[in-house]
Image (cartoon, rainbow, N blue to C red; front, side, top):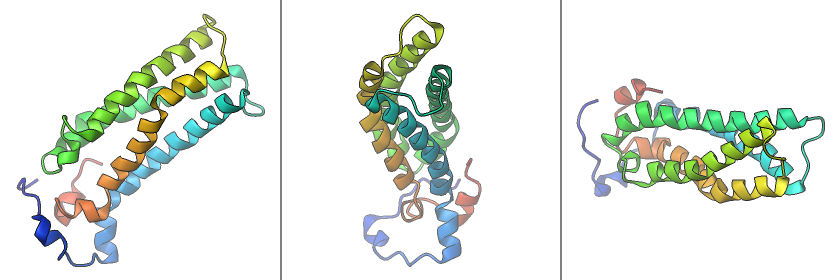
Length: 178
């Protein structure tokens, strides 16, 4: 990917309106990321609603509920691992928000601090070492929920067409690793 130049702020205001095909190119990573993030939101809502109400969803066994939570944890760990290894390093060449010391990676660390405790609790419940208590589950989810939801939105916003066009050409967008 050529160059590491960001378009000067004064030039951004004068950028021409994107055509529908240009918008599609520039917004492709946001669309792709939103697909995964929507799945995380949906699963989170299932788990959090149950924890808040103090009962599992109708027709879902304890084993299914715990497996849903454990899969959520595993999928989020894998998702962030792929981002940090393959996506963020490419984006960080031109986009400050994806550099290690800045917000999006800091959010990953904050999320995983709570997520790891949440996962350990679910594993203990699944193995029979602990009894599932929805109030404890909710407290664990509350410990990282705000930063998770903020992150899910922030990341997609950073990958949106109007932001991506500040840093990348259409040709560069077509060879992004996502």
